[in-house]
Amino acid sequence: MKTYSYTVTRTRTEAVVDQFAIFLQYAGVSDASRTRTLHAVDQRWLERVAVYLVDSAGLRVLEVAVGIDWTAHSDFAAISPQISTDLPGWEQGAAPEIRALGHRFGAKASALGQTPRLWVRFTRAIRDNADLHRTLCDQSGYQYRGRVPEWRNPPVRRDNMQLPDLPEVDVSIWEA
Image 1: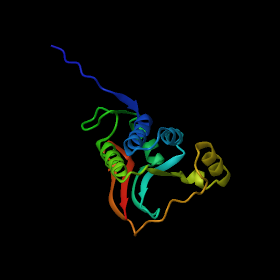
Image 2: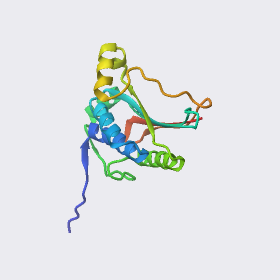
Image 3: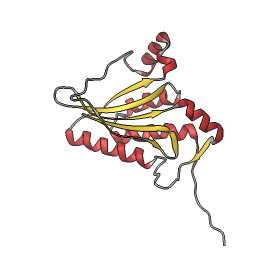
Image 4: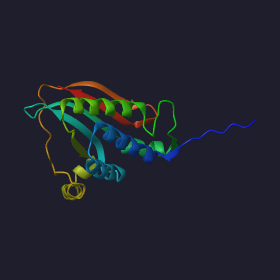
């Protein structure tokens, strides 16, 4: 008797980009914003992507961010360049934490009748080179040295976690 099972193996970088893609989709970010953001993640220009909601005064009240440590990613990729994305709890290539937080954020935005807002942080190497930073902001449709709204109250970090199967990826939740 033979048993066959179906496994999905992706490069580690593809799996990382997929986490951002699925998170942004579940959070309710528009297709156009997702496309440009994912291109920048895939190019390794970004180290953090966040979605947030504001109150009626335009002050931030909730934020969920996904980050990537590209140095750690390179180290992990040298050891294990491919990753199976049919791990326990993973669905459609997404870690359970990514799915859950993206879905919860999207549901909250929908309940409040808001369109999620988005901010990104370019890597330190890019931010340290003003000309390159400005060029890549223009290329990816982001405002150079743009600002996000202030918090309504001092924010409290509700959670900060690394993905167990992709420890170079972290997720944090802030609430005012």
